[in-house]
Image (cartoon, rainbow, N blue to C red; front, side, top):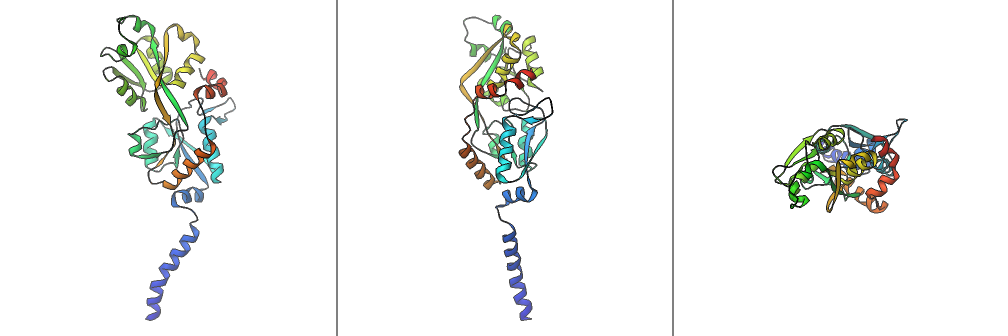
Length: 275
């Protein structure tokens, strides 16, 4: 009987000891190490210069390079999970632990931060507008640009499932916010046809249109809002605390100093080809 008592006491302790030895890392890191790969959530379509394919099918871009380097430093392979049709779906996928991290031109917002953990930004973009010259010419000249845009009779085109819906409602609370499936061709076509007075997105998408389609300058005015910020960061599940700390240290170590102009210069051929 005493033997049974001793076994019942010490066997669980022995099993815990074995499990502790087998688990070398905190649980969120251990899952990645056991799997042998880092699963990265990304948007379904290419968005140069952050992620795109060349003519030979090679996948590359800023977010691809960052993800690959993170996996290498963790000592594992990288796998890109790209079946998300909106950025809101990406956040929900991270909540459900479908991926370890999202590295996908994801804006860090207060609303999204209720559900996931964000790292520090690895690039900060400005917000910008493509404005219909014809629609602007029809408005009262004494009004400022922002007064015209923030008017009940103005329509602002934004991409569905992105942070720019909330950004637009904040900047232009009186205007009508229209959501479109894609930036190009949907929103670009809408502003060229005059369906909306302006298209609203980050400065990279604005500049890409100017670079790839210079003829649109005849019809569209480009504006970058200098006093705005769109912080782009990585996101992990709320309970991946150690992975989050590791990514913070990674970003502190690599010191990313990317700007829109540096990105567009490095990947200029890809941007021109897309357009």
